[in-house]
Length: 67
Image (cartoon, rainbow, N blue to C red; front, top):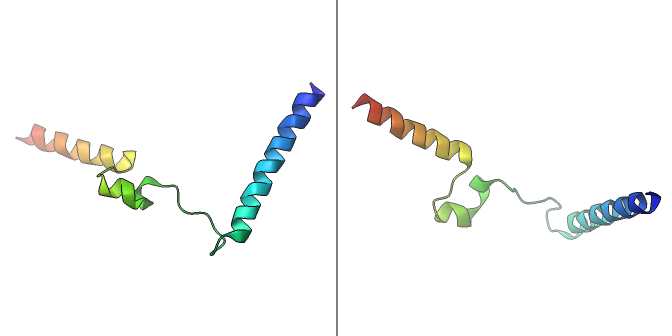
C-alpha cells in the first residue's frame, strides 16, 4: 500500500515538474487555451463547443415550431 502511494506521489510530482519546465521554456510562459472555440483547425472544420451547438439546434427547433 505504501509503495503504491509513493509511486502515485512520484508520478504526480514528475508530471508537475514537466509542466513547470514547459512553462519556463515556453516563449510567453503560459499554456495555450484548450477551449474548442480557440482552436483554428476545429473552427475551420465547423466544430463548435457543445454550448454553441446546442444553442444553434434549439434555435432551429424553435423556428420549425413557429412555422
